[in-house]
Image 1 (spheres, rainbow, N blue to C red):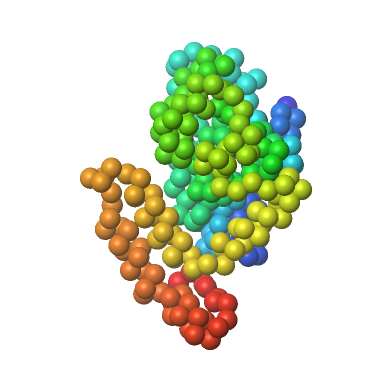
Image 2: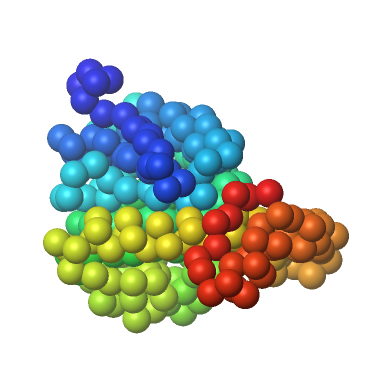
Length: 265
């Protein structure tokens, strides 16, 4: 398979919505090692762009978000414990890059969202699924050990009991089931997914960027142990909102009964 047949594509719309696209259509967007390696730089570049207000992650086409890590590579890249550890370090860099994004991150999920695909989607702040989505973590059917940070992330999303069922049964969840346990935030008809997500992300992008970043920072810190929380950084982020021109614009727009025009400063 040539590099042109798979990859991680990026785009940035005029309204501040950035897109990160997982592309490997021959394998339902299964994530190859080169794709894992490409994700951190692609994510950091989009996040560093001052015009990026929201980052949306999706799979190429409409058949799958990502059907998992590319299992055809397991015999070489995950052949034993040492190789698996090296592979896990590479995937961890991708997860960490997504988790470090200060802007809101949205996962747009259609079709298969399995294994490594679900691990990527779990790094988003919000997940929107088409009604044809099927989400699963089949580690128990493959006999592989699942990394602690991934387990911890899932427990935070759905709670320990639901996380246990996801891991122990290794079964696929429908979009409706995923919504019921809090694994996704919204479920929409497949034909409406892209339009809905574009509008959803656009609505978020129209809000005050500094407020969104401060809120995300506070949400992230609230999930840490109390002794490890950087509350000073949260307070600085909140103070920056009140000191911004966007705050003045928001108050002025409210008084003038018009939509605010936020600039992010």
